[in-house]
Length: 454
Image 1 (cartoon, rainbow, N blue to C red):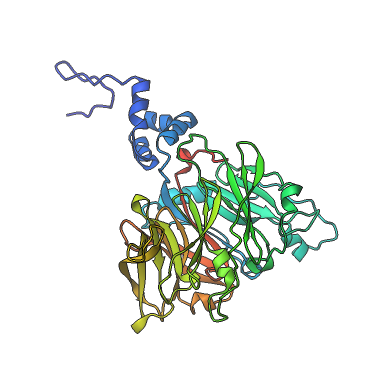
Image 2 (cartoon, one colour):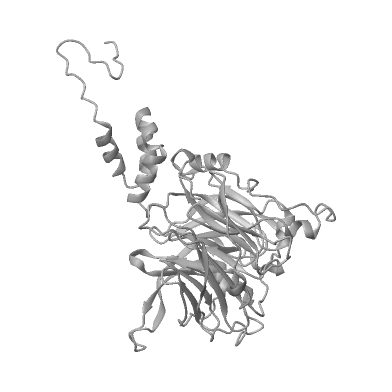
């Protein structure tokens, strides 16, 4: 029997095809698909569906209904914070997921479509006296400082002032190649900043970062935090695109960064360089003194909490993640691995009813995850976190914390708080220790289903 093309009514006596649904009903059905990954599967089924779900108007409506959909893990973006790592070559950029990872095809499409060199950002005014490759030229280059919700935050040292405290800031989307330059911090706020300590190998004396997008807004505003540390407290400002203004945040004066730290403990830069995020709050964890500095992105308030840490953890060995049901999760591994067997421990932060007082909290061990390699042959470290997962770098060279800042070959894996299964993402060239390189898991969508974020 001869085949029939789709849309043919067929011969006499055969059932006529179903009538096409009106466009508005089709839109309502597609809008109810729970994620853009589901939209991508629907787009494969029909050319009409593909044209409909890839329109900016439809994608904006879908985003407003499903703000909590972060997309698929498409890869990892790394950027060395110290000059030696940058000079090594290959330690910077987007590392897309590779087969057999389920998102490898979408990751490859994003890698081809986006400009992760950020060449679309405005260039600094040329200094005729600066030789190519000189330190003066390097300081004028954009430096990646943060990534969140499809947006990258970069900064560079102003040519006019040479200040590593008050740098020029830009927020951009490498897929759409759109960017916005933030206004400088006003003089009345800048004049309150004194005795700032340098970070990131002296390249900067500030730590700017992005606030998460507000789930309730279809078109969320851009919020950026700027922080610097003095010997006795954190100095913090916040910018919002709602009114285009910077404002100061109150900071607890009791936070003394260097007090009570042993010379044999993890360097204080490891505390400052490793910023964690979970459920609307940012955390800086000092394991040695059990102090957590907390920035609530919703209330714009800084506070200090004391949560006793289990013995044996350095800050480089700890990663705070978003656990289900609004809980705070922590992945951690010890400095010493008995018998050479590598394990990863997962904790939740719970209220300590035995300690008395409703504010007392402690680490509660939930799970120990055996890793499939001996720690003495495959040294590993915890890198970036996002959406309930942690990125693990596994190297075939000597332990990462001793590896200086040279570029090395490594494998990147993911573990999340739902499955606790180890999943390989890709091979990559990495530079720097866990505190000397920025690393972010990159969540997103295929280019055809991606909305501009700036």
